[in-house]
Image (tube, rainbow, N blue to C red; front, side, top):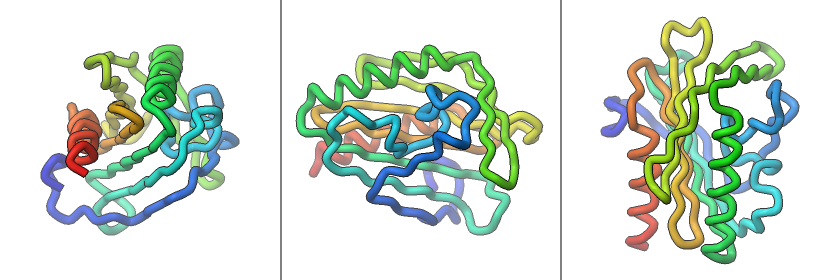
Length: 175
């Protein structure tokens, strides 16, 4: 709530298993750019555990929406390889338009280029077409054998996903 500038966001979904929305996206190679916790994206990374949460305000039309995904790997090398592969995919998918057909609606996301914030953090912004400025920042961070990924969506998004992903890594280090 504090990072997003809200006071009523609550966890509305929690997963401990990967999903597969690859049939919904116009370019399955860019699946991990628009969806989190996707089995095809993490395939081959040898991940060992994951947690995914969606946090938003009550109701259908939310001013803020967040997804946060933490994934553990058997080694720091596995986590770094996943980070490096993701960075390459994000760069390849940057400046593209990806459509998502969820069976009831089609949404088109205009992706910006990926930005390397540091050796351990990448970000990418996107805006949904015909949605009055609804946009998201996507961030991925890596530390040791953990990746932390976040999407922060709303009408005035700047660096919220980067802050969430960085905070996730910081909180994990305290454990």
